[in-house]
Structures are given as structure tokens and as C-alpha cells.
View (cartoon, rainbow, N blue to C red):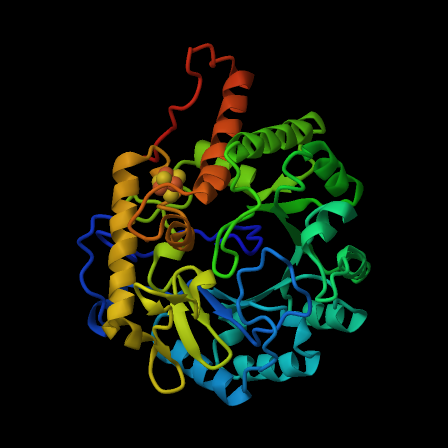
Length: 428
Ligand code: SF4
């Protein structure tokens, strides 16, 4: 999943959530052996509707204006708290479509429902991923009042952003998104920016860097345009794209370094942490904790109470092999109903098999845990696979760039092949 800005990426749960997770020997999940599981992120889709129409969007139903009933939300929260999966504070991410297209009044009631649960105030961290075009002073008051973490989608300078991020009438959305950003700033709402890197930005690292720097945008996540869901091809499918992406990332990194690293770029921060703090995101059994591959690490609920697990991008997507990624209904059943679904067990088995291959074939495995299942599925046609464009550009390339730079600084890169011999976490 690379749809949100995780300024503080998830850390591994404090208990052993998944013995044998990548060995392919995971026992069939049942409520009886579920004590090794815990909820990490609950993605709630209040409505599939989006007020704009980006041409790389993966959501097939973004014109659908239906909205989650409060009765559905109550059921969802009942099932979450009854599940016993809430062991640590977890995030509710309001996502899918444009969450701010649902009125503030709806959220006021929704938050009131969520806060009825005795441990909610202590355990629930709200976050929202928005295109920024509907941000207002009223929204800012609400976001501040509830400490909602905000991710804003802006792709760079106007001509780059407006190339793909348009209204249904074909007009650019940059001016409104930037107004939204200024409104957040005026109201002291902290935010990070997520930018999709596409064919129009990948060759302009200097212009992109100067855009963030000049607009004082200091928390950034790059989503390299992905093949996913309704977005069946990427503008970066061309044969030489890998070289262009690498050149973009490297030049951006070097510009940032030359200025003393004023910008915090998620991909480079994770890479640096992987190198300098081996084990920072690892489970007690020594494997990297990959939240997207963990059965209840991400639970994704649509506005009708249907749910899926793993990458949120999979929710409700139709496939030949698995049917739709709909593992049950929280209106009529529990979170554990998924475990008796053949589709879920097949998806899990395939994800595990793919991760096992990653662990055997890729030297980066200890720094990603097999990366995003949805990218494996959409790029390779199966979860039971290894490398994707997404993992190359968001994990492998940033690590190579940061490691090479650290080696340069330390004067230890005079080997013929300076990279890549990565440090391994202790005990692995
Ligand atoms: S970087 Fe890619 S190929 Fe390597 S382990 Fe991670 S997901 Fe697998």
C-alpha cells in the first residue's frame, strides 16, 4: 500500500504475531489460534465517492455517492472491539474516494459513535488521506479538535499536478489543493504530502525538489505510479522507466543532502532506518514485520460493512482467481468469518508462498518482508510472486542510494561493486 503518508511507519507488534509467517507453514487461521494476531490499521470507506477524477485512480466506483449508515458503523465498531484483536493503539484511516466529500456533520456523529467504546479515546488514532480541495476552516477545526493526522495528495508544481489530477470536467485541481494546504497551515493542522511520481514528474527532480522546499512542505512520501485496480497501466511502464526513476530519486536525495536534509522523505527515512537501526521493524522471531501481509494488520471496510484484509487497494476488486476481495460482512458476521472463507485462505497461502520466495531470492527481504501484496497481484498476476516495480522503486532503490551515500561519506565504497551488502538485523 502506498496510498498514504505514514510519517511514523508502523512498528512491529510487541508480541509474536506470526510464527512461521514466511515459511509457508502457517496453520489455517481460526478463532482458536487467533491469539497470535492483532489489529494494526482499520481502513474505513465512508463513501466510495470522489469529487475529482485523477486519471491514475485505482477505484472503480468513485462516482458512487452512497454513504455508510451509522448503523453499519456501529456494527463495525462492535465487531472490532468484540474480536479481541485490539491489543495496542490502532489507526482508523478514513480513505477511499475523497473522505472530505462526506459532510463534517457525518463525521461528528461517526466520531461520537466510535468514542462510545470505553477504550476508544486511548486506543484509536484517526487519520485521513485527502485531495485537499475541500479543506476549509471548519474542517480544520474538526481535524484539530480530534487530533486527526492528515495526508494531502499534491503531485508537485501546477503543470505536473494538473496533468493527471483533474475534475470530471477536465479542469486542474492544483489551485484548490494548494488553497487547502494553506488553510491547513493557517489553522496549525500538521500534514504530510503524498505525491504520485508519473511520466510528467519523473524527469524533473530539481523542479520537484524546489517545489517542496519553496512551499515549506517538509514531510513527503513518493508513490511511484502503480498498476492497480482500475488503473490497468502506468505511465511509467516504458522500458527505460527504472533508470529514470532511479535518476529521479538519486538527484532528489542529493539536492536534499546539499541543503542539509530539510525535507523528510518517507522512502529515504525508511531506508536509512533499515541500514542504521537493523531490527527496528522486526518481529520477535526476527522477520521484518510487513503489516500488509499480516492477516489482521490491515482490515479494510467498505461503506456497506463488507471487509477485506491485506492491502486496502484490494477491497471489493473483482478478480478471476479469488472472486472479489470481500472476505465477509461485519453486519451479519464477525471479523473471524474471513478465516473460513476459501478466498481468504487462498490469498493468505499465496501471499505466504510469495514471501517465502522473496526470503529465498532477494537480499532486501529483511528490509521489506515481501512488500505490498496488491502490487504483486496487479503486476505479476499472483500474490505468489517476487519482485515488482513498486518494491524496486520504493524499497530497493532508496536503500541503494542511501547506502551508497553512507559508504561514500565513510570512504568505504572503493570496492568494484560498492553496493550492495546490507547489514542484517541481529539474530538473523
Ligand atoms: S524488495 Fe521486492 S523482491 Fe525483494 S524481498 Fe522485498 S518484495 Fe520481495
